Amino acid sequence: MHNFRKQQSTDTTDNGVEKNDYPRATNGVVFGAIITFVGYFFMMMSFCSPYWIESYEETLSSFKNMGLWQYCFKDFTYPNYQIPRKFNGCHNIFSYEYYVIREWLLPGWLMSVQAFVTLSFIIVFFILVILALTIIRLPLKFVLQYEWLLVRISYFGTTISSVFMFLAVCIFGGCAYRRDWLMYPKFNVLGWSYALAVVTFILLGMAALIFHREAREAYEIRGEQKNLVMQMEMQEPGYHADRHHHSTSRSLHGYI
Image (tube, rainbow, N blue to C red; front, side, top):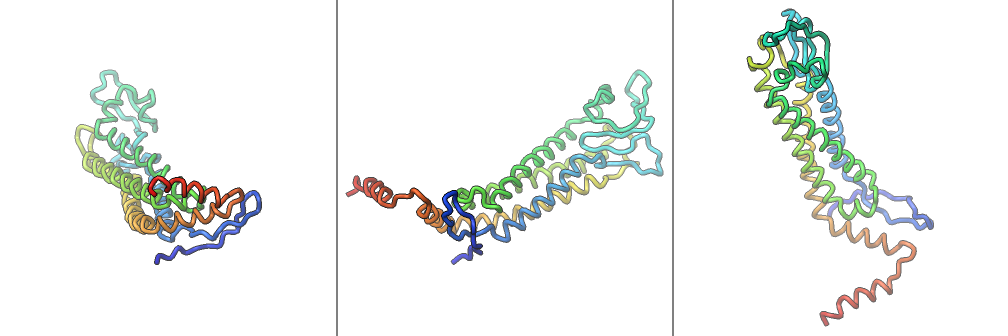
């Protein structure tokens, strides 16, 4: 018999009728949610910060650093630009400042990295919302009856996000030193934003493993959870056992 780790609920309905005891979220779900939140925090820092790759200070390179959405230069001149112009400061990759060199700054492989990280960012956000509702048991009856489904969705979401982040770091790490992108690639090194992306996919992978186990256990006890919800409904005001019995008997009449 599975241990529900029940907690005493002192919640009452509007009419003051006390509800049954109900099982709280398992420690595995809570721990998995914490890991997912930490991974999301690291992902947010990696997503927003412009230090996926940076140049060594000793080289005095005109390229300083870049992120998924920002480039920083100092007296940089693009050789294929016919009109002499120096680029300075940090600007968004879609800003007017980088309009003339955007095609060079944003190759196809970098756009795929942006897409994978963005999709992962959105998916994990919704997974955290689902996990928060599952942990606080809101709405109570729905969570108790479909907890196995909510945890399974969390498992699929964290798995997909982990795979997307893995693809993003692999593509970026493999293409960051291409000679047709940033000039003098030997002067550059992968930065801490990239390292956070690596940590993110590891944490999301760990959370996915935890949710996989918890989803299996929740699926095995789904019948007990459903019975508990039925008991709670029977204690609510306005519940008529005779009417419920009559409707059940009428549904079975065709089989007699």
